[in-house]
Structures are given as structure tokens and as C-alpha cells.
Image (cartoon, rainbow, N blue to C red; front, side, top):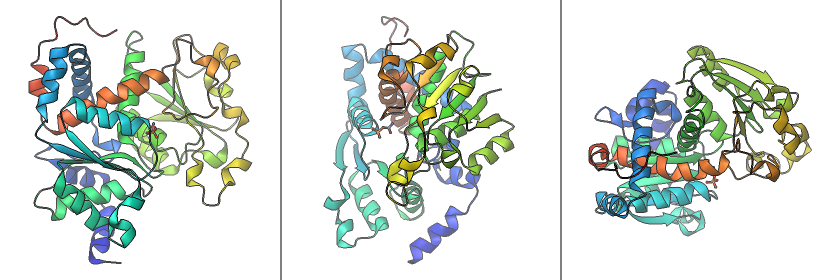
Length: 363
Ligand code: CP
């Protein structure tokens, strides 16, 4: 273990509060590593910005203006694991703000295969760019990168976690909450709602990040629905207990919770994290899939979400049901990510000052 590895191990054991402090610059969000960094106040600010950006996006002059804001900056997308949505939405979010982008999507083309340490690679990447957006197999990779640059670099650049192992995917949670809030805008908002998670909750980083973020809302209730092998881990339940958030753990079937859920958050089995290849395939998940028949057991105003990619957790016949919100999640992901990058680079005033009065309010 190197000196840097030892120092990082010590940081890893720090409290969440201490880490949140490390990921801030001048008292404001700088690195986006874990969803616990996002307070309700910051969420509201990011979503106001998202709504304004979406209206600007309907105007050529709005998009032209946005394209000038970070045209003097460069971003790197360092994606060690496969991605369609997170990669493309971040790439396009960067382009909307005028950021020039470079990428490594396959670690076999990085000098890490020649034995370069992860720490040296990150310092190298950061020396060429002003922002690093990353997805990694290692649950600690984004945290490690942010710690390294904030501790040792004269020119730390923000790190955004686009998915870290089986642990967290905070920007997915950001877009999921935005989608939920918009889905319930005519039903009194997200406060007081029951959100049911279904699928591989043990290794589903999107479900984990979303559970943390739902703690920011009043009187929400969470239902964790999965076979026992894929149930949510105790660290999430402990956090919910500490915040006084009510939850229920069920292991029978998706149908057993449908009548109580205002939102159903489906996930696929994350078998890329199997310790022994194929170990997930022997677990019976047939009762944890949504079928067309299930629609009649759901509330009429329910919202069905899925971070995607999906396999067969949601029957395609559900796609045309007005309760299916998963295609909106994808689109919302790009605009919430534009908002996040703009917020990190302190562009809120310039963006909110742009007149969008000629664009209708968003539906
Ligand atoms: N939801 C999500 O992270 O999708 P990708 O793996 O395609 O980025």
C-alpha cells in the first residue's frame, strides 16, 4: 500500500459530514460524489435552474447564449464501465454549455494498463481539463479522485460521479427526484408520497442514491421490494432510521406493494457485480417484474420509473400507459446535468437572468 493509499484509507473512514465538507469549495458544492451532498435547498435551486434551462433550450438565442458560457473550459469523460444514458447526457450537457470534451471509455487505451497508478492517472487527466466526469467499477474511485485533487493539487478540478461500483449514482438520483417532483406536481408534490423500489436493491447504485435523497422530503415512506438475496443493505436502513424516515421491507412480490405505492422504481438485476459468474441467475425474480396485468393494481396517479437499461422488468406494453415516466427520465437527465455543471461553475445568475418569457411554461 502506498503512502497515498494509506492516507485515502484514513479519509474513507471519516464521517459523511466531513466528506461533504471536503467536496465543497467556498461553502458550495464543488465535487458531486454522493447524493447526501444535496440538501433540499440545493435541490430546489438546481430544479429551478433546470426548468429555466429547458425553456432556454426552446430558443435558438437561448442555446446560442448557453453555448458561450463555458466555451473557455474543457471537460473529460472517463468512463471505465459501459454507459449510454449517463455518458451521452453528460456529453450533450457539456456541449450545451460550450465545454470542449475529451474521453476515455475503455481503460485498455489508458496508460493505467502500463502500470500507472490510479492517482497518477487522475492527476494527469485533471491537468488537461477543468472538469472530470467519471464512471467506475470501484465504489471509491470518484471519492478517491476528489480527495486526491482537493488535498494535493494546486489546481483541483471538480469531479462528478457518474456511477461508482454498486454504491452510488448521485446524478441519476438528481434526475429521478426531478422526474418524481414533476410527476406529482398536480398531486401536492413529492412530500408525503410512498415510493416503492423493486429489483436488485443490494447492488443497485441508483436505488441507493435515490433512497438517500428521498430523506430530504417530508413524510415520505419507502417500500423495498426484492427477494431477500437482493434486499437493500443495512447502511441505507440505518440512515433512514437516523432521519426518522418510515420504510417497509417486503420479499413476496411486486404486486404485494403496488396498491400502496405512489411511485414504483423498477431496477434490473446488476449481475455485472456477481462475485461468481451466473450466481444471480439462480435466484427467482419472476414475481418482481411489472406486467400489463399489474397496471390495474396501481394507483391511477402513480408514476413508474426505471433508471434503464431495462431487461424485462417492465413489460413493453406498459410504455404507452400515462403512468410510465421512464422515457422522461432520460430527457430530464440531460437538463438536470446541464444545471448541475452550471451550478458548479457558478453560472446561476447569468442563466436565470436570460429572458424566457416568450416560451410557455413547461407542461
Ligand atoms: N441509468 C444509467 O446510468 O444508464 P447508463 O448505464 O446507460 O448510463
